[in-house]
Length: 317
Image 1 (cartoon, rainbow, N blue to C red):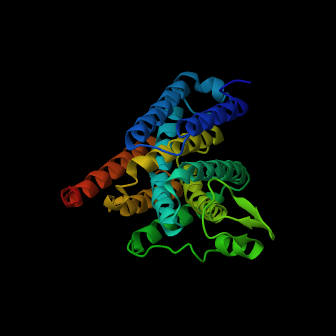
Image 2 (image 1 turned 45 degrees about the vertical axis):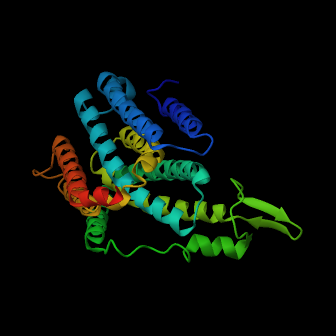
Image 3 (image 1 turned 90 degrees about the horizontal axis):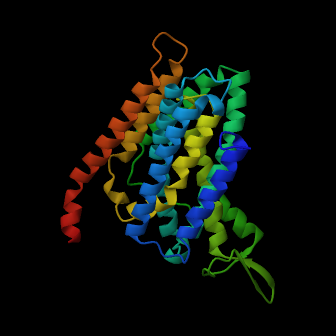
């Protein structure tokens, strides 16, 4: 077993998750600490990209990609998944607010959310790769789905916040268990004289699991438009999700300022959908062009958002 195998990368992922869990022990995450760790996960992803560039033939002996093509595909997929994962942060913040999740247990909740997302995406990557191998026309279904998702993001009203209080996971938990009125630390269940009760933490985890499914349905077809190499798809997803917890605590107080993020993501998903439609034609969009479009779009969205909402800083002071 080596790093170049799925088994080796699985072990590396477990070690990285353990490191991420260790650095948030105690439940208190400062912005400075979160920023340092966010930078660490980005640097680690870029270092892995260098490894791909140097050792791609050992990683995928049967691949038709050159070293530079594989590295470009990984970097593009990583930035795409990282961009889409920021949308998760808005939903996490909304869930934490609606269910009044104590700050002390938010790191644990985020970790469980990330682990759930990794498991779901691993399953969907394996299924998606097999479907694309057996049924090439699935590409066009993926493309149509991405275009539809981009349209939904573009047309939806950002001021309308989704209400998770009556969502399916909430109803299922309340139907199966009695639920306590308050949180009990990190416990999912507590016991009283009448038997076991679920805590609101179980409901929050169930809701986050549902959002993991929703976001995986967007992100997996999107990255298959960049590359159909399962190893690159898997590793790009892992590295994009690993820094999600730290990034949340960095951006927690700034999420409302990213007013142009949704339109930017809508444009990116639509662009990737078009790229997928053109993949087998003379007008196929090179991966390096996709990389440039993603970088420029996200950069413009961030800078434009910060400029438009610059008065928020003055009001805060």
